[in-house]
Length: 365
Image (cartoon, rainbow, N blue to C red; front, side, top):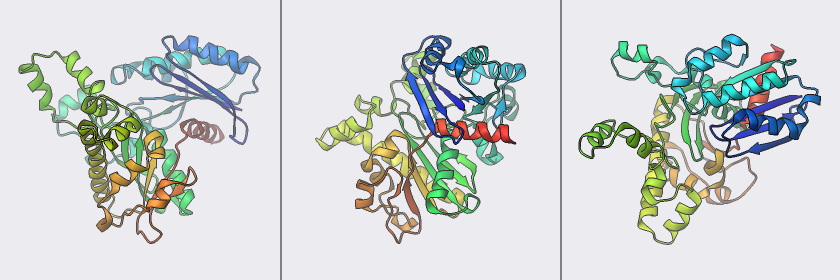
């Protein structure tokens, strides 16, 4: 069996997989302030000390440039995760606390760290590099790292399987749309461009994050509004996005209010979908040839309205959503017209399954 621990800044998901990597147990601890304590609750629920485990797989948010693939945790890896805390101050401390607590509970099995940033280690230099003073960027590790990598990797593989095509021959845009959201251009199974950057703030409009914004807005708010850095960061991270535009970060509520004629919600939905459409067009150009678009995560999997509006007007690019297929069907399905050159899909993500798969593959290799 493989136990997967998916640790967020205030949550802990846990799922147990059998030898065929079928889920057999799991749960979620929310509103976590003590991650080691949360793990003990999960351990009690699973009777962890008695489980015939093969390994424990851990989701780790930030591997920097050091961790480019799943890695068996030892003292050096723990120290590496600790040294990367400045790049992920909300997540890496929690990830490390769970790793250390899990190793103490089950020191008899290997623990494998699967890094969210690792899938984007294949970004070409032109995509990963910001046009900042090179010495300054190198000194402080400033570059595009990208996030949601475990999800993007899993969904791109599942899309190839759904279409019955070799992953190595497929060019795909994956749209991971949840409260956090990112786009990724995947060429032959390799990430070649992604919308999140040095942090998860860049890119698409999100529930409470601005996504792309002119950096000079920071200077303007400091000089003219007299705001400090902490206030500006809070405005960008927690009071921006859909919440900032219309007061609600839930796409379902925003769509309902827009349908009822609320102008703020209507604008918020327009901005949200426009940003997605812009990235689809840009990533089509990056890839040169586009075979598939895959929607995933909470919004991507469940909002037919967002899928339709985000791709509206892209028919000249060979992208056309079939309204009936988009409206209803299996959780994993094709939603484009049968004769569309670009296949549009809904592909549910499963980060825990992906971590289990990568853990098993590392140990088998």
